Every structure is written in structure tokens, then in C-alpha cells.
Image (cartoon, rainbow, N blue to C red; front, top):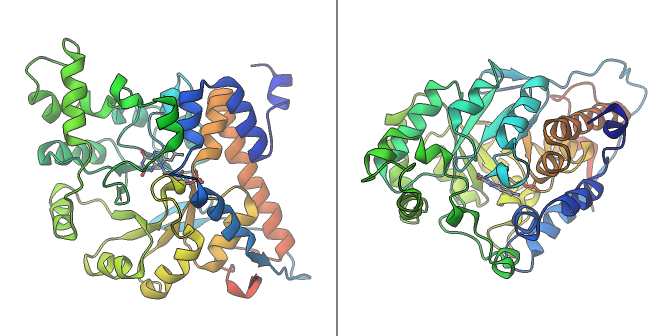
Length: 372
Ligand code: FNR
């Protein structure tokens, strides 16, 4: 893509979404954009941000802004991470390699999904020493679960994000309408077919019997019987910090603390799991009341611009994740698109910080907010 095309990349989220719609077939676009049921949760995620209003302060010398944040002992350039997004190959052939490279170039942590289009080692290889976390959908087969976590640790991922809000798929009407299930076509199983424990359970290698590999994956991907009692097992697999992603209820926040997890990500999976559930930003308040600063509490679901980041952090989040915006960037322009989306968010964050009278992330607090 030449410079002039780079100039013409979209800026706003609706523009990126519109352009992604134009380049993607119905199935992949619906999978990425869609949510559970009538998609009320997606709308509420945005609405929740609008309900908090920023109340800037002035004459505070904002000529220097420090956006850095320290999480789990590591310092990152901004309180912003790329959310784990499955099967990025449906958005662009370069898939997670492009997103990971773009993130690495800016030092922004990339969270790789369990169900990626590229194996976790290949993704790590394009990132050098840049920060990366691994998201675990805990498979029901314990050997494969242990193996995935150990491989991630060996490949330099520095935290394990256990996603707890997907005991089964949400009722996603766009996918139903499009009869779209990429996993049935063997998309997103790269980490499984390259896994020694997984391969040892197949009669023939996946290269010779792809259908059997897909069936085996299908038999272990969902793990609806998982409970809090299983969590300690994970500690036996890894020494990495463990975060739980998808916590919304204060009682679950209590249980997370009792189980000594290292962090919580408040999220409703971008509205993809339960129609009509609480907006992530609203649930964040309840979770923070329970956690009271003992462990980092991150959030995602609905972050679209710099002021959303500032609102989430001012409410009390330690950092945010964002998902669909960078996947639209990937769909529209590969690595360059992802880079542009991240850069725009960071620049918007920087300018909006200055214009709110904030010089650092630590300075953000509820005194800058009014709730409508
Ligand atoms: C997701 N999300 C997700 N979460 C996770 O833990 N593992 C995964 O593999 C995926 N896959 C995935 C695919 C797609 C297409 C989307 C849109 C989302 C959820 C994701 O990590 C994050 O919670 C939301 O995307 C955040 O909401 P926004 O920023 O998309 O509104």
C-alpha cells in the first residue's frame, strides 16, 4: 500500500467498521461485529461510557504527559492492551502475525487467543522481546490444557488470561443466519494441531486426517463443567501470573481474590455471550468495591476512543483492552491498519489527557467524572 492509500485509512470506529464490512464476506464480518441475541449488550457497553461525563481541570501545566503504567511488575507505554481475538485469519491472511507485529512495534502488549489462526510460537517469533500474554480457553482435556500453558510460558508470554465467560457459545444470531462456524472448517485450531499432547491423542497426524483433528478439537474446546475448584490446578502448570477475564459479579470478584488470582479483567466479551447483561463499565464499579486495590482490575468491552480509556481508568481500572477496532484495522489494511488504530487511540488518549488536565495515569480518578 503506498503513502497516499495510508493517508486515506479510516479514522473513526464507524468508518473502520464500514470499510471492514466492504472487504469481508458476510460470515466473517458477522462473526466479528456481532453479539449475543438482539445485541442489546453491545449497545449498552457504549451507552455506559456516555453515562459518565468528564469534568476537566485547567491551568495545571500539562506540557508533559506520562502514559506509562506498571502491571504485574512490567511497565508498558500506555494502559492499553490488544484483547484476545480468535481466528484472525478470517479478517486478513496475515492474521495474528500482523496484529502482533503492530503491537510489538509500539510496545503495546498483545494477548493471543487460544483459538488463533497461527500457532503461539510463530506469533512469539515475530514479536522479539515485546510484551505478550496468552489467553486460555481451558480445554476439557487436562493434558492439552497443561501443554498449551507450558508452551506459552516457554515462548515468552508473561501472563495467562483465563477466560471464564464462555462455558458455551453465546446465541449469536448473525452466525446462525449466515450458518457460519469457522471452527467446523478447521479455522482457529493452530495451537491444537501443533500441540504434542493433542497430536498424541489422534490416530493419524492432523496433516493426514484433518477431519479427525477438527472432531477432537470440538470434543475438548468447551469446558462447561469447569469450577472454582479447578483453578489451583492451573498453578501447577505455570509460574506465570494468572488473570481471570470475564468477571462481572462482585461475588465472583470475591472468589477470584480467595483463589489468589493475580488480576481480574472485567468484561462481557464485547457483548457476545449474554444479551441484556450488565455493561462492563457498570460492573467495573462493583468489582472495584470488592477488590479495593489488592490486585489489578482491567476492563474491556466498548472502548472506542481516548476518552473511553480515561473514563475507565478514572473509574478505577488499571488498564483497558480493546478488540473490534484493531480487528477492523487488520481487515482493512493488515499490519498497517492495526498500527494505525493503535496509534490513533494512543494519540487521542494523549491529547484528551492534556485537555482534561491530567499529567499521568496515576492522576486519573473519579474527581474528573460526573455520572449522568
Ligand atoms: C473476542 N473476544 C475473545 N475473548 C477471549 O477471551 N478469547 C477469544 O478468543 C476471543 N475472541 C473474540 C473474537 C471476536 C471477533 C471478538 C469481537 C471478541 C472478546 C475480546 O477479547 C474482548 O473481550 C472484546 O472484544 C472487547 O470488546 P470490544 O473492544 O470489541 O468492544
